[in-house]
Image 1: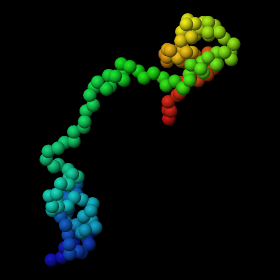
Image 2: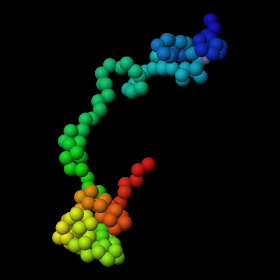
Image 3: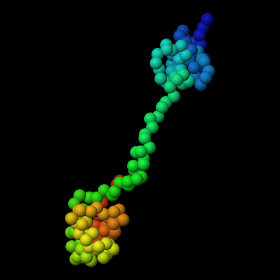
Image 4: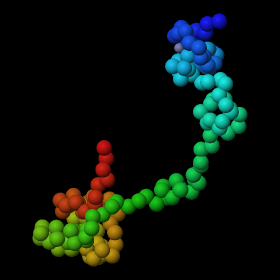
Length: 144
Ligand SMILES: [Zn+2]
């Protein structure tokens, strides 16, 4: 009895029973790779669909992590030596700390603290400073 591949019709001595989309076909070796060999030895092949047991468990992250992000927004990343950048830019514009403070609607003591690096400006203040002095004191994250 001749054995013909049920896919390509090739006359071959060796056919393997192969499952393709639910149908079992006798296929030659070159067609067999398109399907799942039915008579495969019961090795631990994870690729077989419909095997009993393990549905993939996706690891869950604790919700606390997300909460952290929202509770404490990461501050803008300020460039190194940003206090000096502010002071130099202010001085090059001929502004006193007091005048600069007025422009920012901040007290001069705030300006003093900023320029000594003892306080970190809020995001809004960073933008105001940059706009007023026409400088950049924070690094912009790359957005593509
Ligand atoms: Zn074939």
